[in-house]
Image 1 (spheres, rainbow, N blue to C red):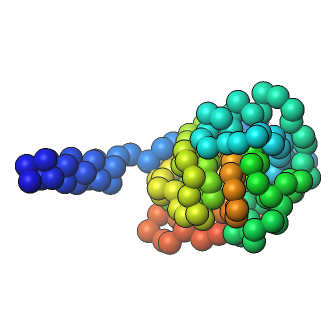
Image 2: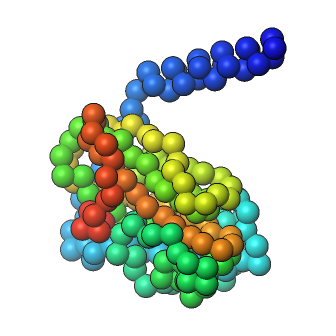
Length: 189
């Protein structure tokens, strides 16, 4: 019982600490890019197996294939056998996604992702979404960010899918409002 009480106290303390934490300050691209193409660039690797982000990063050191650009980060949960995003496979896929995301106004925002399986996403130099493991299409922890000015912010994401289905979605909302799906028009590369 004492162990349970201590565990609950630590958990509540960590939640309170996170709630009071200052938002992550994002750094805009400098210089701001011009003549961007719509969507995001992506490179794929196809390892024999992948169960975590370290294995996903290692897979990108070997044979990598450039994929057709992603329209954005709104990839619904696939059916078994459907290819992952623009890759040529449906299972054991690693994606190295890069480009920019545009914020139309400065301010505080909440960002989260839905992912199946692992993801580490950075925007403006800050980790804004991370899950290191395997899961069905579920949310990452929501992250509060501070956007100092409107414009383009660099986006980098390491994603992997192991078996069966795959999904990857990004949501964002201004402070005090529920996050919504990011429109494809917010991305460029």
